[in-house]
Every structure is written in C-alpha cells, then in structure tokens.
Length: 261
Image 1 (cartoon, one colour):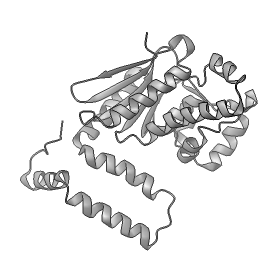
Image 2: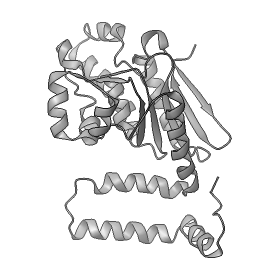
Image 3: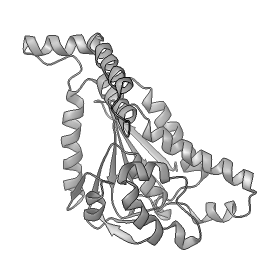
Image 4: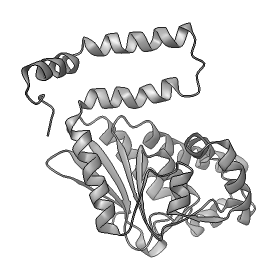
C-alpha cells in the first residue's frame, strides 16, 4: 500500500491523501520523498488546476514517525543535516508549487503536520482538530518547519507556541492565520473546499501561479522604487500574455474565458 494516494479528476483537481492511518500519517523517509515528488510533478502538469492535501484515518498528520526519529538519533550530524534538508525540500516544494494548494485538516496535527498546513495556500480545519508544535517536549526544536510556520503565523505567535508546545484548536489556528476556515464536520469542510475550487477554476491558471509568486515577491519588502518597478513590470508582462488578452476579450465580449470550468 502506497503511503501517498494520488487521484486526479476530470477538472484537473488533484487529491493527495496521506495514507499511513495506522501511524496517524506521520512522516518517514518514504512519505517525505513521495510528497516531494508529487508536488514537483503536479506543479509542472498543465492539466492540473489545484491540489488538495488530506489525511486518511483519524488524523491529518501527527508529525514525525517515531521509528524514523529513533533511527535518526543514531545518525551522525552530517546524516541528520542531509535528512532534515530532505524534509525542508519537501516543504519548499509544497510552498512554491505553482498550483493552488488546499489543506483539508482534521484530527491530530503535530510538528511537521503543522508545517504542511503552513505551506498550503488555503486551509480548512474540522472542529476537533488539535494542533501542536510539540518539538521542545522531546528536547528538539521546530527548526526545519520554522521558516514556513513563522511566515504564516508571524513571530509573535511563534514565540508562544514554539516555546510552550501547548495544544490549540481550529478556532485558535484560524485566529493566528494558520488556517482560513473552520468547519463543523467533514461535509462542511468539503463544501468550503468546493466553493474555493469554483473560484479557482474561474481564474486563469497562469495568472493564479503568477499571483502566488507575487505574494512571495512582495511580502515583507520595503515599498521602494525597485519594488514598484518590479510590480509594474509584472502587470505589463501579464497584460501581454495570451491569458491576459483572452481574459480582457472575454470580459468585453460578455462570455466566459477559455480556461473557465
């Protein structure tokens, strides 16, 4: 049985399901490699319009697999550094994937599982989801996931949750910006995702990818002449693209653009 199930529907919606339910979908070397490969491949597939990341069984992702952590404790510092970089590479592949990434979150979400949520563009959590950045209780730190989590929730929130390893629920995750919506049950979560997909499928796929990159390009930057010139160049480029021309033509012709589904 594969640790990652991949299904793509006729609209180009890819659904990736972490498939280690007996381990609460905890990471090991195999799952990390499978996720990195999947997001790299799907990110360059023109037929794919969006990616949903979910977990099988009772949990979304309970962080690191204990067997993997036990093996790592016997490795050299160099081996541990290489292993941590593979985890970072996987998270980076999700974070920079040109396709919109939606996390459907439930149950236990610990350590690296929080990192997965932080890398998603949109996230909905079902009531009862329990989040925890638990590393300090094991004598560790959330180092590898920290760039992605801090980018999502901010340094002020991280200074509490990284240090205390307290658990928090869906409402608190929404308040700190880790997720965007909460849902009372699985059906409600699926309805939230379905609504997001309606909007995403109405948008030009290339423009969506560029808009995602735009956020990365401008976040945290000083608004100076260089940034203003960069953003002016970005919109000038997009106006001249086939999508830009089609979108404006469709608007004035009062019809749907060719990419709309």
